[in-house]
Length: 169
Image (cartoon, rainbow, N blue to C red; front, side):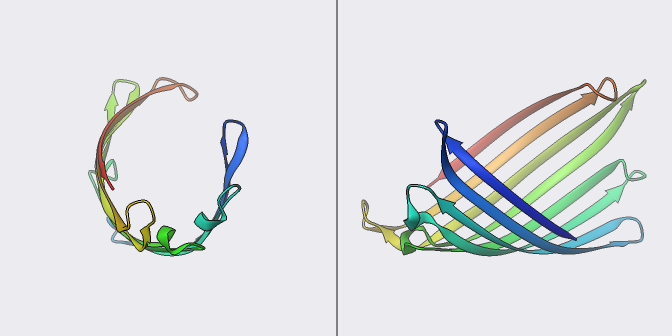
């Protein structure tokens, strides 16, 4: 598959950042139970007021899905790596992350609900030193979530989500 995304972020009504990403992916389903997806992406971000943060980046992702219960439930595991080359080395970094998710589609009478439990973990190592700290920066995160969505009609559903995150920099 091919996917192209473009975004413009605004802050207080003014353009803050432009972001563009192009992804090329391939996947294969084995035995109607296992899906493997590999992807490569390129991205570019620019900042209206801070050209030092502008960066070109590349990344790779690998996903494995395991379907069971006639496809109504699945586990997915993701591993990803990325690199950003910014105009200023203190914003350049390499990152790696992992995601794990379990999903179940449940039927209660005429209502269909989806329950999902997941987590993601990762870290980002920066190349240059931050001038304020005279030290290299390293970010780490751990995020866990639970989601419940129930469709009441074809046009109306209720979605609830709880998330807990631990971010360190």
